Length: 170
Ligand SMILES: Nc1ncnc2c1ncn2[C@@H]1O[C@H](COP(=O)(O)OP(=O)(O)OP(=O)(O)O)[C@@H](O)[C@H]1O
Ligand SMILES: [Mg+2]
Image (cartoon, rainbow, N blue to C red):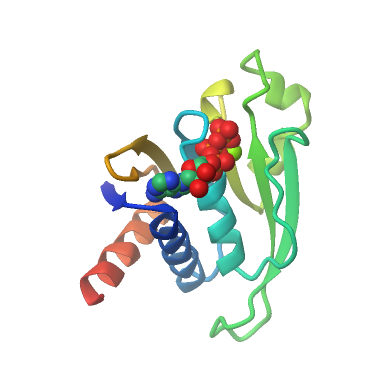
């Protein structure tokens, strides 16, 4: 299942991030794996930042280009659930990895296989990652960028369905 969005400028990329975060909230903030592919400067971090902001992360959201991993904790504020929900979020950048199983050597297996929301830039620098719920590809478009989302699981299909109906309502 595929959905493409033409984001004509940075603000449009950020609106898409907000819509993705809303779809996640609507699904009850489940643990998910999202991968983001695209050249250097495509807008992967921009999109992740806007998702995290819309999920309620405050303060500086650094690119994990050097640290490899930044972690956050978000709560279920605003969710219509009976009990409170907390979710750990990992923003990971694998660009600096040169061998396919370095992510396991670096101890990321637990983060990626666990109960967290994981947003991974440069997943193509790793082999054997768990299946992504949503694969995002960002390509240059004139103007802006074309963002293509591909669902890899039922959870990912649910997100795409929600994004489609939000678009239809808009
Ligand atoms: N839809 C858009 N149209 C034009 N420019 C955009 C759009 N979305 C993001 N940008 C710009 O593109 C750049 C993207 O930088 P960003 O750090 O997000 O890229 P990245 O894909 O994470 O790169 P890296 O692989 O180095 O981590 C920023 O300067 C941002 O303003
Ligand atoms: Mg980046």
